[in-house]
Each structure stands twice: as C-alpha cells, then as structure tokens.
Amino acid sequence: MTSRARKRWRLKPCDAQAAAALAEAVGCSRTAAQLLRNRGIDTPEAAHAFLNPSLSDLPDPFLLPDAEAAAERIKQALHRGERIAIHGDYDGDGITSAALWTRALEKLGARVMVHVPHRHRDGYDMRSAFVAHARSEGAGLIITTDCGIRRADEVEEAREAGIDVVVTDHHIPDEQIPRAAAVVNPNRRDSRYPFRELAGVGVAFRACEALVRHLGHSVDSYRRAFIEYAAVGTITDMMPLLGENRVIVTHGLSALRHTRKPGFRALLSVAGIAPATLDARSIGFGIGPRINAIGRIDDARLALDLLLARDEAQAQALAAKLEQANTNRRAEQDRVLAEALEAIASRNLASESCLVVSGTSWHSGVIGLVANKLVEKYHRPIILIAIDERTGMARGSARSIDAFDMLAAITTCAEHLEEFGGHAHAAGLSIRADSLPGFQQAVARVAAEALTPEDLVPAIDADLEVPIQELTVSLLRELDRFQPWGAGNEEPVFVSRRLEVREVLRVGKEQQHLKLRFAEPAAGALAGLRWNCGDQAEHIHPGDVVDICYRPRIDNYDGSLSIVLNVEDLHAVRGPGA
Image 1 (cartoon, rainbow, N blue to C red):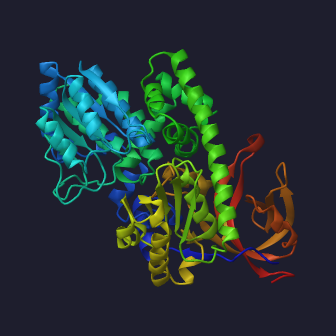
Image 2: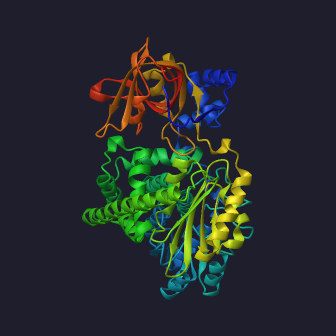
Image 3: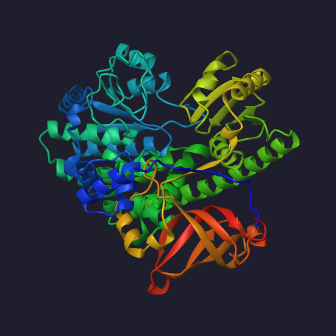
C-alpha cells in the first residue's frame, strides 16, 4: 500500500491515572474523562459545568469593565429621549451584535439608528464620517459593538461634537483605551471578568443584560429574547465553545430550533437546515457564510436588515439576496483560488517557507477565504494580495500555521506597509503595489529563519488512542454530551491501530470518495469513509493492515444504528505496498 504525503499524528498527553480518578468522580468513562482533560477540564466541578451548561452559571455581567457606567449612560439616554447610534461591523459577529443592541434598545423604548460599514466604501471600524453622520442625525450617544476599542481619535471627535461613546468590543486594546463614557471589553488589562473569550456579540449580550438589570427588568425574559443572536455570532466568529460561550451556544441553539424571528427562520430555510438537524456545525457552515458573504462582496446592511425583519415576506426576500450573494462569493472564491494555484505553479513557489501571491483582478472580500484554502493545501503561511491597478494600492489577507506567528512576522516587515493588524494566525494589511517586491523578500527571510522542515509537514492533533473494540455506540452516545462541537471543543479525533482492511470501494457521484470496511471481530465490520480520496483505492487492498486517525460518528441510516469512521489519515502497517 502507498499513500499521499505522510502526515504527523500528534497524540495529546494522556495521564491514565488522573483520567481514571476524574472518571470515577464524575461517573463517566475513562475515554470521556481524558477528553475532558484534553479541554483543560480536570476537576469534578468543572466537568459538571461543562457537561451541564446552565445559564445560571453565567458570571455577573457587572464584572465587565465599565458595565455599570455603560448601563447608567444608556439609562440617561433612554430617560432623556436621546437618539442612540449603534455602530457594528460587516461580519457575522458585528452584524448579530448590532441587531441585538438595536432590538433590545427599541424594546426599552429607545430612538435608535444603526450602521454597519460597507467593506469597500467605509472600511473597517468606526470612522470620522460616521461620527459626522451621527451628529447630523442628532445622536447624543454612540454605542460601538464588535469594534471601537482602537478608535481613540474618532471617540475624541465624538466628544468634541457633544456625543458620548460607549464602546463594547472584544478585540485586544492598545496601551491606551479610548476616552469614552464607558469601555466594556473583557480583554482590558484591568478586567475582573472571569471569561475573556467572548465574541463581540457575547460582550453585547452581557452588557445589555447589565442594562436590563440596572433598569429593573426581567433578565430571564431578556435572555430568552436575545440569546439566538449571541449564539449565531459566537459560532460565526469561531470563538472557543468552552466556558461561557458553551453556555450561550447550547441555549441559543435550543432557542433557534423554535425561533419565531423571521430573519432566522428565512436563513434556516434558504440554507436547507431543518430544526431537528440544527447544530453548531450547520450554523457555522450554513448560516455563517450567508451572513458573511453579503458583507464580503456587497453591502452588509442587507444582512442586518434581514436579522431585524419583522415580516416573513420581507425576510424571505432578503434571505434570497443573501443566498445569491453567497453563490456569487463561491464563484469569485473559486476563480481567485484557481488563479492563485496557477501563479504558485508557474512561479515554482510551492516549496518556499511563506507564499506571497498577488493578483490584479481579485476581490479583496474573498482573499482571506482563499488564503485559508491554500494553507490547507500547502501547510505554509500564505499572504494573498489583491492589487487595485487604478489606485496603485493593494489589500492583503494573511493566514498561518501554528509554528509561525503571522502578526509578529508582518510587524518585522512594517516598513513596507501602509497599515496592518491581526493576530498570530490571521492578519490583514494594506500596501502600495510598488512596495510588494521588497515586502515579499522581507517576509521570505523571516519565514526561512523561523520555520524548520518539520514545521512544514502537516500534522493531525489526535485526542487519544482507542482500541477499536472499545468503540461502541454507547460510548459515542456518551460523547454526544460534549456537543456543541466547534473551535476549542472540536469533535474528537481518535487513533486505532492494526485494523485489517476487508473491502475497498470508491463511492460518490464521481467516485471521488474512498470507503473501507475493516474486519473487527467484536462488531463484525466497521465502515470507514475518507472524503475526496477515491484515488487511494488503487493503493489499498483487502488484507492490508493499517493504523487510522479518525472521527467516529453514529450512523442512523434506515433506523439501524452503526458506527462510521470518518478517516482523516491512515498509515500502512502491513500490505503489498508497505
């Protein structure tokens, strides 16, 4: 048997004794206990909170920095009848948080105007033009959501115009925070809030809860009314589904299955998601792309209007526009990906430590998505740059691998850039087109010094090694309690060794997938599926013995329960090609 490029399997450390002790204390299997420990959950109390996510476990929202000041200033605006201007962002997090603030404040009797920026006309975050617009519309208070923490100058402009600003954000602050009426951000250095991984909509959800409490209204009613926004925004922003986010998403998904909000109902309909199948994955892959797509290639305001829709017909019409935008986004993404792949091949770039690829007809709204695809393919840091020949300026999106801090690398090359920001795994930048050669050489030097050949070999992180005979339906039922799966709480990856291949098939409309049957005395046979690897059928034969890395799932086809292994990778142990 032969295979594609061999991947490294990185098994997480396993303390069998500690897992056994946790299993006994919690009353779960040792496998489940080890999975808990892999997620940093190593006490019975933490395990109980994880396995039974409860809204009653949410911390006091007034522990958020400036939460009380924000609630008091908004209360004054309500009593004075001031107009309140909401400023969100053009992605799923910013749109859901803007919708949450708008509907919650309207319910409290506020006069609200709301804005989410156009990616190309307005740029990211609050700008001077918005402050001027808010002033012309008579706003006395601006509330930023999922943005604002790094807009000290614009906050100062608002102050000078007689407008107070309440910043609600989750991004990392600069050394000096804006001189706003309140800056609500769990990532402030002086924060006493026990959970720092909230999405922007999570900060909005908790800050607004503090306001509701401050006004003496029912917190339970507020949570029931608005947790759907918080769940969708948290998932689409790929925040870790642990701690408070896990509580919000679990209860938000439950609410979404019975939602009466026309916008969410229309989104679920166009995405083909039935309430019974709704989970974090279907939100992340079905709803999130549709909300994000309109902001990438058109006007994010359409997505906001959809989430604010009160009429079913209006919601369906707006959802259809988002669906078309998502179709257009996919087509543009495929085109840019094809051109980037051609550029990499024609210039023999694939072996370089960091790939910097540019194009002149690329839509800047999709280059981040394409960069993600290229990282998956080449397992190297990627910087994709869209050049505007008319202005001579270019915008770039960078994505990285674990071994390479992209923001640190770009910072080292800052002399070539006009503007940049981000974090270790993803960053954005703007650059003059004539500065590209120097930037490319500088990044190449940084990457060559920082990365080893082993860093450029793709790796799979596996939770633990499981003897195949221990893989039962009852175990997988137990692991269902770990849902919702997502960032920080990924679906478990197991390793099982020395499985004998009984049958090899190619399946799918184009026979693009690989299906294997493994002999297993206790279960009779187990099916394994390897997506988009049908060509491997030529190299695997009945009688081969393999080690596999996989995600186990329960298949309920035709009402008959069985286990299917979604195979991530396999290594030959014995066989004709081994």
